[in-house]
Amino acid sequence: MPTPDAPLKIGTRGSPLALAQAFETRDRLMAAFGLADDCFAIVPIKTTGDRVQDRALRELGGKGLFTKEIEEALLDGTIDIAVHSMKDMPVAQPDGLILDTWLPREDVRDAFIAPGFGGIADLPKGAVVGTSSLRRRAQLLARRPDLQVVEFRGNLQTRMRKLAEGVAQATFLAMAGLNRMGLSVGQAPIAPEDMLPAVAQGAIGIERRLDDARVARMLEAIHHQPTAERIVAERAFLATLDGSCETPIAALAVAVPEGLWLRGEILRTDGSEVLMGERRGPVADGPAMGKDLARELLSRAGPGFFD
Image 1 (spheres, rainbow, N blue to C red):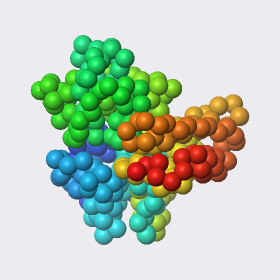
Image 2 (image 1 turned 180 degrees about the horizontal axis):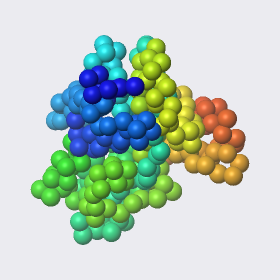
Image 3 (image 1 turned 180 degrees about the vertical axis):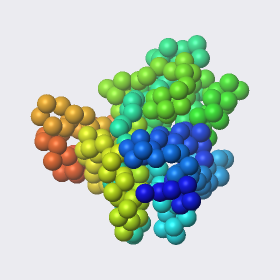
């Protein structure tokens, strides 16, 4: 067990939301093992994605921008575990690391933020909407091709400031982040039927070294298996599509009486075409359903769909 003299070091990005997720992880471990908070150390790590705010993610290289430096710290022993927003995670981990612990999933929905407007349909023609997500951009333009979409990078606080400054009339945030931060910013949750969320949205994943048996035993105590069953199905869908921040992909698995109901969606980047499908089956078939649904959509899309 960790002690005040040898605390468990928890690596995380340094944004307020990322820190809130790290503290949630710490608090769950404290409760599970009856440990005091001085048995843990939160270690903020600045990633490339955090440092470079003036360029679109697709120009910088995709999802690994928010994980590379944290995973390097995990591999060299600077930290013992890494806490991640799962929607930012590449589908493959570096050799020597494993991601097999998930906390209970939060609200999966996107939140529409637009002072003075109740929803997307209420925006005037030509209104400016800010988002850094290619998925949200494509989904929005599929519904409202008349809108203008501008790049909107930064953490929650930065994006809210840009909205107040008039850079855009509306933006999107994840309901999970707002809930974890205890914030209400006039958000209007968007039903998954209207805007299917990003793969693993609302889930916190904890990464560790593959050979660290002590940490593996500790993480078992806070692992949430129902969340895991949903996430592995969604990530199998993403992996088969070879998805990244450069690809508009959405997916959501939910529990149903027969096991899992998985919905998936791929879009042209300009929103001009949307392909969607679904699978239902036993929980154990989740990864197979994800792969099968991805293959179906790829076959329907044909070459050049994501160009």
